[in-house]
Length: 308
Image (cartoon, rainbow, N blue to C red):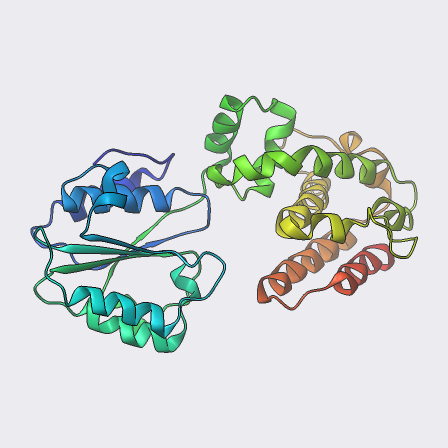
């Protein structure tokens, strides 16, 4: 099997071991978006079916279920079950289910029938970003975890993309050290970097309202409206700035930045206040993931950053 993803050598070793099995069973590739799980799954499927990854789309024994932003429902799994009743042209069929964390309970229960194929003529590969699968699903699968790169690995990767040393810290942070998220993040990175620089220059906390364009009602440049399509990354930019300053203030001995690198911001918050701000940002990141988030929530966050 060809290694198509960066880092995660342990995951690669486990995948090659999986392929060495005489009768490989159902498989879960678990980890954040942007770590190369999809490429790894396709290479694995190709190895099982005896074809190249680029040939999978023409292989009648390969089935891809990718609902992208939509949940995987019972009817989607029923369609796979219907296909499983048709004999494979080769020795088996492979079903690749993307975004399995969005599969509802009813769909997961229906999937058990495919996972319990003792003859291994139907092999299911699940890609999962969050630990939301039922125990009955996980107990029937081999799980291989993919982890974010180390700071050094991510910096090396970003350097190959032309990112300067001074920007690799922020760029890696907003990508969560997941290299394949950078392609998309590179489009809005310059704007987010500029906002970070503006925050560093504020002389009073109240100026945050100006930086985030929250003073004028219905401002077209308001931070949340502009960046809602990549809000986690936008929040991570703010979090990186405050968290890095907090780290510097508590005198991390090996840290390569000084308080003077943060402009006026270094004088506006105590260590305790920086810690509170970082906690508030983390809470908002979690709330965003629930889908129940609005411009008012962002305004509340900025207000808490001002009044902390």
